[in-house]
Each structure stands twice: as structure tokens, then as C-alpha cells.
Image (tube, rainbow, N blue to C red; front, side, top):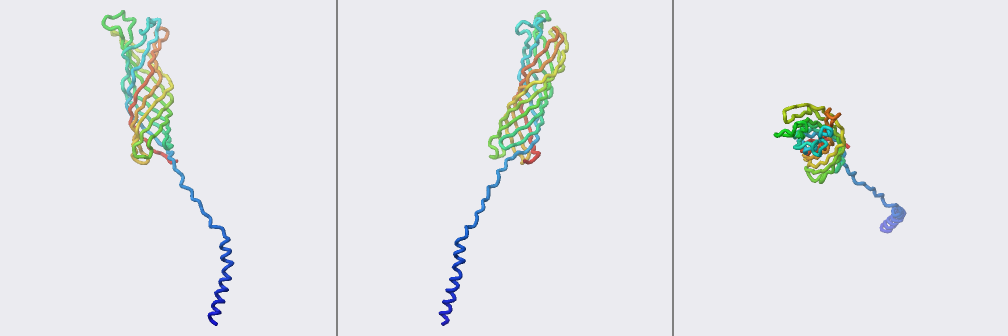
Length: 260
């Protein structure tokens, strides 16, 4: 009798459970939640830069344009043995790092370099020893450039090579313009300031020191336009120096000053 009661109870429980099982079978599967990958963080930090270096000028063309004084003869008004002394340059700038590309604006100043050349001396009665006068001037330059750079192998290590280019303006000022003729006569001319379109090409290597500090060793070629001086001869005779071009070998630091 007990066995029969047990069977009846178990059967009843089974019948009661059947609707619940059926309802469970009809339920939709649990939702699958999509977890997106973390966003890629692209560094776009602002930075400050400081550069110092050596400026090695290319010999410029120098012309003394006074045709009514005998310089209409081809070559007479063109100086020979021209040169500009090597000098120093310092630059400041602020820019932004976008990852493999950087951009900045830089302001550079060079210590005055001395321009020299020899000019055929029309008024020296063809001195048998030397027919050329010595001509000198001091040249100082400010340049403001907008620059862009492409980095190579960013993230592969602490050393990152790069190339870049810049365009902007330069102001060239001549001063202490003077001469000495073969007979010992000396004189001075008036210096001038000129504004020119300027451009530069550069290449270098960055050495990462910390997350915010990098050492920058770089080379830059700059084209700065022309400089001028003025004489009162022949109703106003300009002396034109240029184009002024130079190789710069620079050492700099870049310091991060902000986040994204």
C-alpha cells in the first residue's frame, strides 16, 4: 500500500512540473552583451622646444648696382671672394604632436655674421697692386617658420628619425657697412632691413629621455631671401646680398606641456 502511495505522489509531482518545463523551453535565450574594444589613444600633446646650433652660410652673390659710375661693364659691379662668417643660432617654438605627425611654429635668431667681398674699384685709377676694394657688412636675421614633420618608426624604441619642412618669413638687417679701397681710403654705407619669404628643409633624430622630454639632434637648410644696404652714389645705389642660404646643425629639447 505504501509503495502505491509513493508512486501516486511522484506521478503527481511530475505532472505538476511539466508546465514549468514547457514554459522554460519557450523563454528566449539570455542576451549577449557586446563589449567594444578600448579606444585607440592617439597622442596629441602640446610641446615647447628650444634649439641652439651653428649656422654655416653659403657664399652669397653680392652686387653693387651703379651703372653711371662705370659699373655698367659686365662683372664690374659683382663682388668676388664673397663669404659670410659662421655664426650661432638659437630658436624657440611651440607645437603639437599628433602621433606620427608633428607641427610647430618656431622663432629663430642668429648672432650677427660678417659679410665680406671684393669689389672692382673703378675710381682707383687701375692700381697696379690691387684693383679691388674690400667691402664688409654685419648681417643679423630673425625668422618665423611654420613647420611640419613626419616621424618614422614611432613606438619601436626610444630613437625616432624624422624629416620636415617649413615656410614663413625672415627679416634680414645689415649694419656696420663699410669699405676700404686699395689706396687706403675708407668709408661707410647705410644698413637696411628687408623682409623676405623664407623656407627650410630639415632632418633629424629624436631620443626619448622621459615620457615628456626628448633630445633632438637635427640638420636644417634655410633659404632666407636677400639682404640690402644703400649708398648715396649714383642717386642711390643699392648693394644686394643674396640669396642668403645656410646649413644649420642644431641640438634641441622638446618638453611636453599638455595632454590630449
